[in-house]
Amino acid sequence: MDTEEGGKELAERLSRYIKGELKKANVTYEALAERLKEHGFQKETKDSIKSKLKRGTFTATFFVSVLLALGKDGIRLEDI
Image (cartoon, rainbow, N blue to C red; front, side):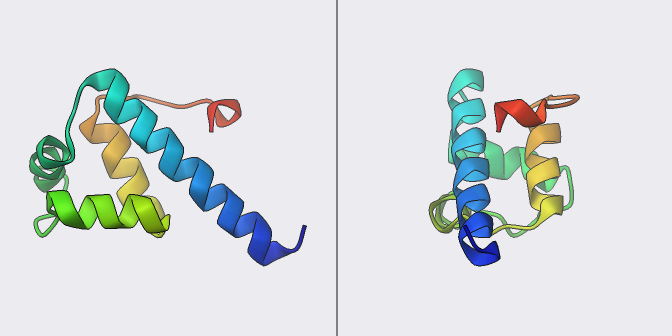
């Protein structure tokens, strides 16, 4: 597996992880957008979140902010 393939696979896994955590917490993309505003992501919308997760392209800051918005205080790398 080359670096590009590995990066693509990790992006897909991170997207699946976020989607799973949203489902567990019963939080919609719209509700997440509202929660993210408290973490400095003022322009996030339901559609922008959906698009990021579909593409698998988002920053580490976005990823950590999503975890904070969901009240997570940590993750196990094995879970990703």
